[in-house]
Image (tube, rainbow, N blue to C red; front, side):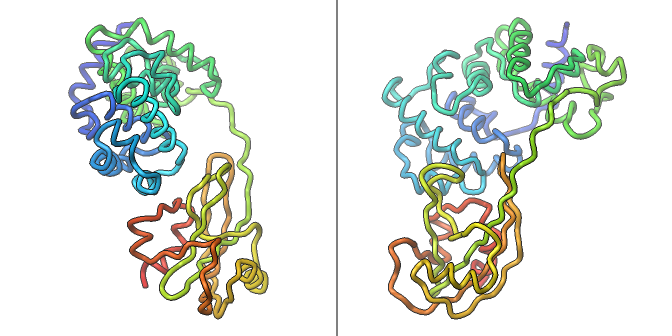
Amino acid sequence: MGIVEPLLLWYGKNKRDLPWRHNCTPYRVWVSEIMLQQTRVEAVKNYFVRFLQAAPDIPSLADLPEEKLLKLWEGLGYYSRVRNLQKAAKLLVSRYGGQMPASYAQLLELPGVGSYTAGAVASIAFGLPCPAVDGNVLRVWMRLTADGADIADPHTKRQTEAALRPLMPVGRCGDFTQALIELGALVCVPNATPKCAVCPLADFCKAHRQKEEQCYPVKKPKPPRRVEQRTILLLEQAGRIALRKRPAKGLLASLWELPGFDGTLSQEQAIAAVRSLGLEPVRLQPLAPAKHIFTHVEWHMTGWQVQLAPLPDTHRLVWATEQELRERYSLPSAFRPFLQKFLQT
């Protein structure tokens, strides 16, 4: 198809200066790719630098206490990613002496590593001809080839990987991988008009020649998310707020949360809910409602700020100061709207 040379030339002139593109060790590439899953590049930059300072290599990641690990990840969401990251680090220490294997097949065996991440590490860090096909690459390829296959179908991704493999240039596999991703992020963009006038592959693009760029890629609509009504309690006592751990399985497994209950509770129901925790409310104030979107479910939340009478601590709850919230306990971003009042006092 002849896309390799113009694509690499464009990448050399237009690539963004990103922290993980300096000193491209396998570990740095791996951490960045896990962070970038379902997260914007700009949001990841500071997280990446801070994470590497705390865990500069695989053994140090394997040894991080869970609370510190989750605090480093706080705000990135999809916490299973960081848990799998540490599981994989421990496996790498025990099986490979704390090094990443230069093998696509062995990389695929790591927890949380799929074909895209394995391909990214193999090509960028080790220079292997292994494609890394994410949403950006799929969009570029579907437009280049005017392919109407459903990109949500795993078969489409496998076909794209197979088509790209023979195109990967010896000695520059990593640049080729990153160039395709960069083109999709900066030029062949999603949810907007692609910038065909500055695209180095416009002359090769079937969708562009047919003036059908926005007909591709084709993706089968997702089923609507399930909506759940939740009531969140901001329980305050002696300058501390109550936290509890969520169940070990399911949504936000084992993470800290503000105590919550199913449904939209009235003031009387909220008082009863507080008392069910062994606490006595003195004053309740409504908090502004909030919404949080997960992959398959939406939480529509109402909240109550509750001042409590002095009572002995209940073993079901942990009481945290403002400083401990900022430095120690990791709370999912779903609860952040309800913490603003407490953190500002």
